[in-house]
Length: 227
Ligand code: SAM
Image (tube, rainbow, N blue to C red; front, side, top):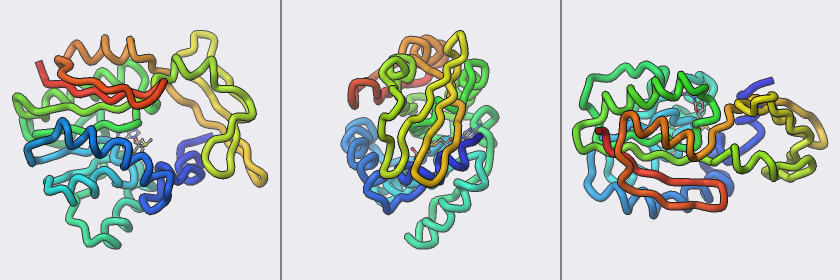
């Protein structure tokens, strides 16, 4: 059971040249540009294979990508070579950032909440507030999995080859194991279930919300400033 299978299976996260990944970039680029008018130093937190890091580099930002997965970072570095990118990809933990206080103008945290339990996400937010410069911006995009869960049905197609075979929430619905199935294999992944209300309550401890856009029924783009 694991995220390596999940990210290998879904190109939307693992192949920056795929249509699925490009679509995510196309959806977010206008919003990023709306809230990132001045150029500066960006931390792409939990950067995965780096698609958003490369986008912002192309747009004139100075970008550092950080992730704790060797698998994702290896791909990010391969894409960097292919693109002759100068983004620095660092292996590290979002809960304990290896950066000085006040060192970034922006921290980007895209589509990554499912990896974090509440006490861990609190650490990520605290660290983000610490490394942001005063007046810097925290850009957060997430899916409200709590709202999505009841409509996540068996048989629902995900990506090009897989469908949801089983949805197995724990009794308190703090986490859910989803079994993905294709013609050739199946695997399970455990996600932390975050709802919008809980994310905002936690964020409020460290940040002031200064912008929000709804991307679709269950997905949000939010912008915060450190308190
Ligand atoms: N932000 C990227 C994007 O939108 O393409 C990647 C999103 S991917 C869904 C989530 C990423 O979070 C994975 O690359 C995973 O390795 C990373 N991650 C999970 N736990 C982490 C941690 N404690 N510290 C840093 N990265 C982490």
